[in-house]
Length: 305
Ligand SMILES: Nc1ncnc2c1ncn2[C@@H]1O[C@H](COP(=O)(O)OP(=O)(O)OP(=O)(O)O)[C@@H](O)[C@H]1O
Ligand SMILES: [Mg+2]
Image (cartoon, rainbow, N blue to C red):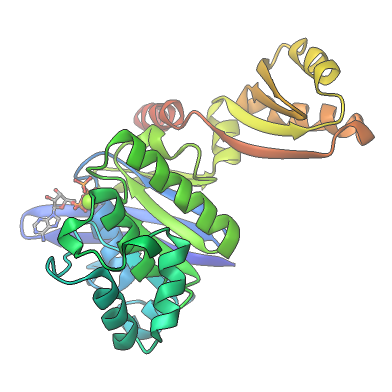
């Protein structure tokens, strides 16, 4: 089932047509990147999904409900990190967590659990103003996780973070998805940044969604390199066999794990070859590709088409 379904969304602010035609779906269990340059309409789209803005035109369904008409019901099932969250700077982290939990009908132990999940349990006694930007974002994610949402909506969670904090935050999103099984929609204007985190992408430009789908499908469709992780008891032999295939661009061996870079359009052939090897393959997983390259192909093909 699709957790999010959006069709033909349009939104105007005065003279600015922020959204012209936003159409996409996000299936349950995905980590979907909403990717596009500054001003392309990411925040406007997310605010409409959360029920904070009313669309001018189009269809929006989140868990099958219209978020403008059924805001509280929809928000009950989702956690949101806004683009510019405002916290009371002088409050202690523990006070803020306690207050947020009470406001939403949860206990302080629920708040402590989400604080542990995002790794801020050691900072409960700090005032909010003493937190680094990276830890502020973690606090925001902790608040979003209160109440075990099925969907996490994160608007540019890595904005204004240094490279290390950025990498740590992306790793946190990956772990939360793995451990909680939550569906994630995360926006960024730095297109390649989410390559290791997302398995699904929605590309937006000038208020129009250019294309969307799983990275595996999109890489295949646009002929962009895909990366697979193959687990095998005989990594070196297998690496030698795979590298001799002309559509395999590279193979790295990490213990019993191979990372195989393959021409996107040849993914089905690679999967067939691996399937024929039978017992020597323990698992095969698509782990991403070149998001930046994919984005340029999507943009140019859209322009050409
Ligand atoms: N409240 C508003 N009033 C007027 N114009 C707005 C408003 N909100 C957004 N816009 C305009 O709508 C367009 C889309 O803005 P939006 O914030 O959705 O983009 P974005 O993709 O989130 O950008 P960024 O990467 O900078 O966060 C922009 O041209 C923006 O200036
Ligand atoms: Mg934005």
